[in-house]
Length: 265
Image (cartoon, rainbow, N blue to C red; front, top):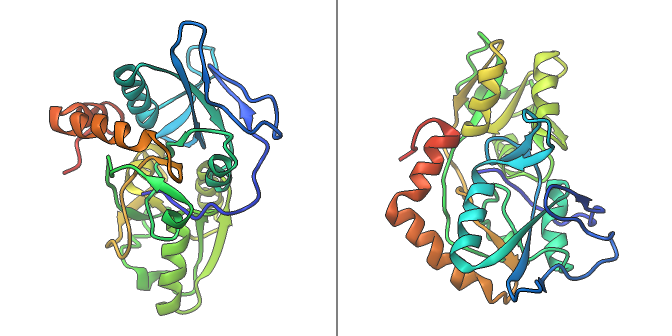
């Protein structure tokens, strides 16, 4: 899945859609609404379609996507009001550690390293890494990256995976960038030779960029997307119950079909 080690300094959070933070000094985002409905704040990095991204088609700047739909479903089932804030991916774990949000949904892979800092839900979706390059490059194996300049998202699982590949394949120059659209543009402009991006995300960019291609890489490490919580969070068990229900009822598959175009088995 996406992603990544998030232990850099906390970025000041940008307010979006249905919620806002008063600033980087705010330490709590869980409150009680006047009607007695609990408010929980989700934080994400909305640069990762179709998991989460800005929808500007209707003229209103709103974060939508697979993760957002799952979060809304859980909110309805558990009777809480959902608020969504954003930051760069590498600021997500520091944000919940600082209690600036109650949970993270951002296509985040539950790695052992991250599990030292946060608690994770069960995995609710899985995907694969791919090599993205200009059409016709036909890069299908890690060995073919030798001597190439390869882009990855900063702090991502893909960044860690590429570093592992670079220990075995010589002369790979790793270029870490903040945003997936930046990486795609670097490939298209030939400033980098290739990139490592998750397959569902790569497919979305391929649909709008006929001049790129992507090929799957074998999985060599942790995979899947899970929800991250502050350590000791009382919400983990309740979220897991709903996620299990969603998987058993086919709701996760339905949302996957909606956002990815097909259900990945």
